[in-house]
Image (cartoon, rainbow, N blue to C red; front, side, top):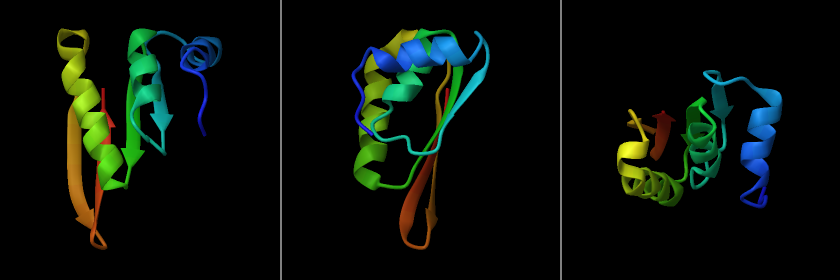
Length: 87
């Protein structure tokens, strides 16, 4: 679902604590993962659509030193890329 950019960090702060891990089973373009990082949370995002996987990787690459560690795992499952981005 498309939400304004301001609502994700607000909801993450309201319903989790710093250091918690946020699970986003529909990673999309990685906006929730970035909001989690900005609010001091860890993040696990899952996305199966290759075009969104590429966008997630590009967005994290632009963050540079803001991100301590990002592991993107790709595997083929029934002919599709499946990615899990752990931040």
